[in-house]
Image (cartoon, rainbow, N blue to C red; front, top):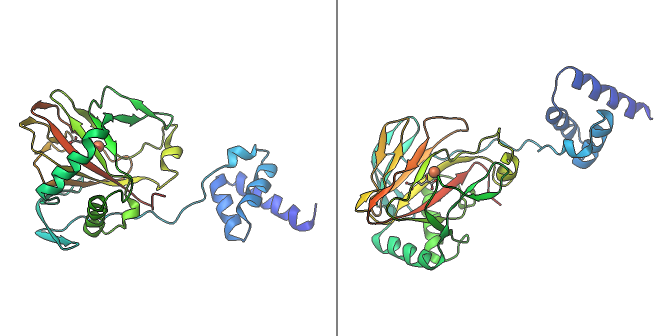
Length: 274
Ligand SMILES: O=C(O)CCC(=O)C(=O)O
Ligand SMILES: [Fe+2]
């Protein structure tokens, strides 16, 4: 072992005993100019860990946050959106006329033939059928049609984060009795599948729910920890932002009691979702 290897080994052991976690030691080695694979191999060997256990994520630059739309009005891509209500915690905004009526109709018509039973993210990071979410839905491909591109650009202008921070636009359909039980949109880092679902794009930081029609009865979006229910009204939208582990952003799609409910959901990530 060369003098340099030996002192590196000693430094790693000392840092580890001093309580620095592997991620931190790895980051220090990367900063000192080591290449990532090489640094991981040296770390694995020195700390007698299988290399796989060292498959830790290199710290990314800090994640970005959306800008909460400011009342009374924002013009995004030439489209005027009124902000009719604000709540501080969690940051909630009600957006009027985010979509025009013809845009709502077009989204519904495009989605109709492609609906499937909605899934939720399971503990292991996969998808599952879940009684907590009985709607049916579909995803558009990014930029799939000029309308999808236009909506993405509008949301990016409104929230200050580029379109690539958004997950694919999802359309959901609820019939009477169908609902989405209280849940958080952020991913729980204590769950097994967390790394898998955040590998691309990192954590979710904000959600926009666009109401594509007005259900005859029920179907509002309810925040049980705030005591607020947002009315589902065609063309309007709900924006809310959150941090991991926040409790205020708990929300539910209330059961539709009469008629049907159509929404489009845009989830926004802290990093580009690629
Ligand atoms: O249907 C609703 O009002 C809520 C939908 C929702 O929470 C979601 O898509 O994440
Ligand atoms: Fe949600």
